[in-house]
Length: 139
Length: 129
Image 1: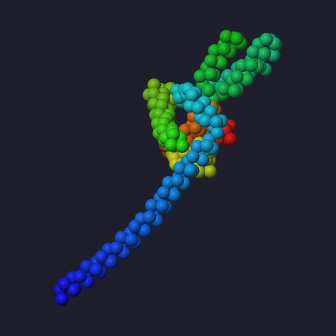
Image 2 (image 1 turned 45 degrees about the vertical axis):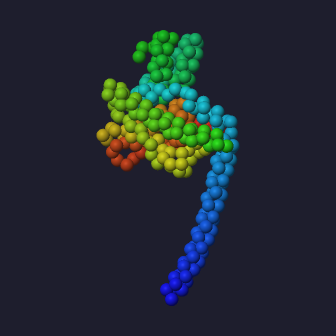
Image 3 (image 1 turned 90 degrees about the horizontal axis):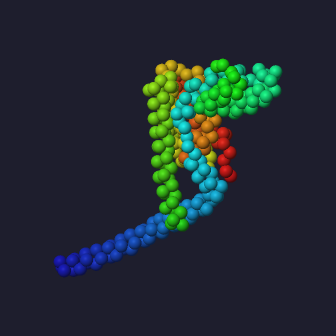
């Protein structure tokens, strides 16, 4: 009697194990394929994105990284540029040199430079020196 | 394709390093200027969340804001904040560098009060199509 029960139990256990193994293998296969497809998709998207980067973008990036940044001048300009610009734009105005054509021309060029660099402290200091030399202005 | 992928990873790490280096350089210059008395206010730059609507083709996924805090001990007036912003935005080299390193927003505010200004960087430079 015990032998019969043992044989039946073994059979049932074998059936359960084989069914479970099949189910597990099938389950793994589905997720393995999904992961594989996702991986291919990611590689494809990365490839497309890289191709989309045109040479003009790469050139822009390269040029932008090449320039030198003067942080000291930026910090100085943030606090000191406005009074200097206000002083220069008044003292170097071309209307103050209407009686001398040569000085008027120099003042015009200088004034244009001053307006162009109105937030660059370093450049304005250089222009101030230039104004002292060429226009004989006392600051 | 694998080489492209590898280059992309290297570029990403290089950009991260350059971002940190730029912030560090700015903060060092601001600190030195404050210590020697050239600057009356201490400025400090850091990375912030940024404004999503200011995005451009070089923008980072996250943290695309370049925020400067002015430690003045008082509430800054609008023209003071605007002055600092204009100096930065008129420096083409700096704006270009900020853009290619993934920043799209410039934010400036004081250490007191809630008032601050924000600019869209792509308005100040022509970006390639």
